[in-house]
Length: 185
Image 1 (cartoon, rainbow, N blue to C red):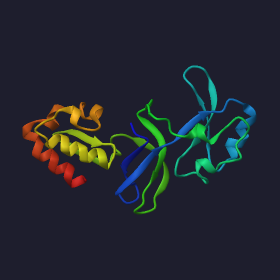
Image 2: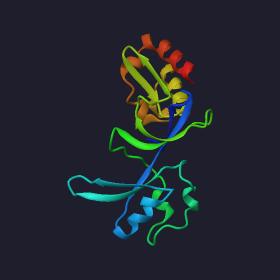
Image 3: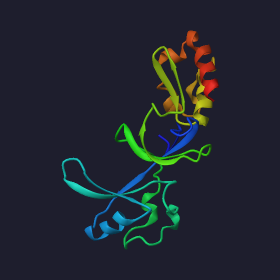
Image 4: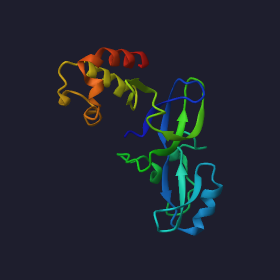
């Protein structure tokens, strides 16, 4: 899953961007106060499995007082790069923390993602929902559904395209699905 998703803006219902927040464990109790009082981070005390309570610092990309690379007053042993996005995002929970920002109405807030309900590029067909992470994937989805040759090797986002339910790909559904997707795009 990408770190940035196209979502419906809660402010104007237009296309907005959701970006996942990053969390790191605060290993030393002496550093907790810094993160509790920081304008750049959110502090959380939470359980990790059955191990007990741990301290965490969350960084919400796009919402911090300062950009991550400009934070220069962290306690010893911490680096802003700790909160950078990893190459791959592995979702642990169905709902994840992050921030929504909309360039149309200037909406900027923390948000608990409810995927795929929050997806901007989504359509329903015969009781099922088909969605795309972002505009580029939606365009590729249209190309895939409309194609007579569905050789998966010719398309980007192969791993997602392989999981499309058959009802969206049938000859009977093709015209309706493509038309709905084009309307959203």
